[in-house]
Image (cartoon, rainbow, N blue to C red; front, side):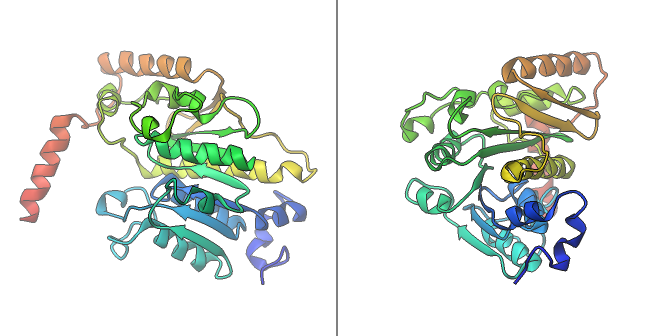
Length: 313
């Protein structure tokens, strides 16, 4: 049985102490969605010593996931994402407990999914706000922190929702506090509410396509940054009772952001104003020809699909 003396954790010391390592090992993390950021940050937490997870994801890995998710490989195409995550964690720590929910997060299983969790992550699709609302409400009920981590370009954002005070997930998303989930499902997501940092070097046409319902583009660097930022915020929650001198996690409405390309890092308190400011910078730079093109128009995507279909026939 692994302990704080196990060699797997020997190189952690120097950046945190034995009491904090024990706190990591005693943590139970619930992750709703392990097909991107959730997969990568969950594996980082497993490497650090987290030994119990609850993970939910109804989807399977496909070739389009390969560009950013280490779990998406030729050998895992067609396999459920939660099952692949479990296998990866058990390869890191055979003694770990990984409770999987291959049907995804649902009203019927949300209590079981969150049972015993001490921290939760909402890594569900932004286009399905009812899932994030479910997780957020259950986290408040259980009085545990709920983290939202996202990647955008070469960058990532993270915030935490306090179970007792401050802005809630619904506040950030513009969802009425007691709105039934079947009505939340019909809410049109406003990216300006939940995407406070937009890379100024991006192609404005990509942002416009996403606002019109195109799949959100995602690259491996952004997922890596999200995993680093999200897992570090999780550690700050885990370390909060250790008595060691630690800075506090970022609580909503504040968002932390990091950009590996632009070397930007900071915390914004006003998400919508921050989104508008960054989006304007992106637009101006794009129209002046200062930004690289992203080849993400509807025509570009349709052309690639048609070309691939022809090559495969």
